[in-house]
Length: 132
Image 1 (cartoon, one colour):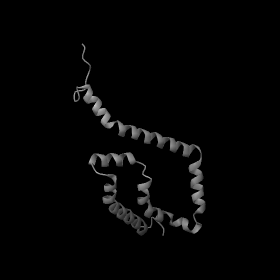
Image 2 (spheres, helix red, strand yellow):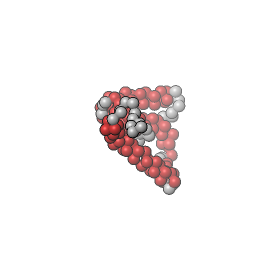
Image 3 (cartoon, rainbow, N blue to C red):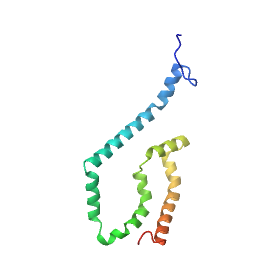
Image 4 (tube, rainbow, N blue to C red):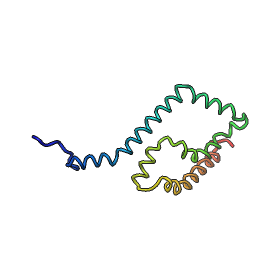
C-alpha cells in the first residue's frame, strides 16, 4: 500500500536518519582503522619487514643478556601494551559506553595493572620460570 516499511523503534524516516547520523562518524572511523591496520599488517608481513626488524633487534642483544629477556619483557610489557594495544577497539568501545575519557581510565587503572605485571613477573622469577 503506499506506506514504507519502517522499523518499530523509529517509525519516522527523519528519526531513522538522525540515528544513523549519530553513529556514522564512529563507524567510519573504525572501518578506516581496521582497513589501515589490515593493510599495515599485510605490508609489514609480505614485504619481509617484520623478519628484518626482528633479526636487527636480535643482532643487538648481547649474548649474555639474552637469558634475562623474559624478565625484562615481563617488566616492560604492560607499559608497552598501552602503546601497542592489539585490541584498541574493545578499549575505546568500553570507555565510550562507560561515559569516561580514555585518559581517566588509564590514570585509574595504570597503577593496578603495573603492580599486577610486576607481581606476576616476580612470581615467575620466584618459581624459576624466568631466569634472572
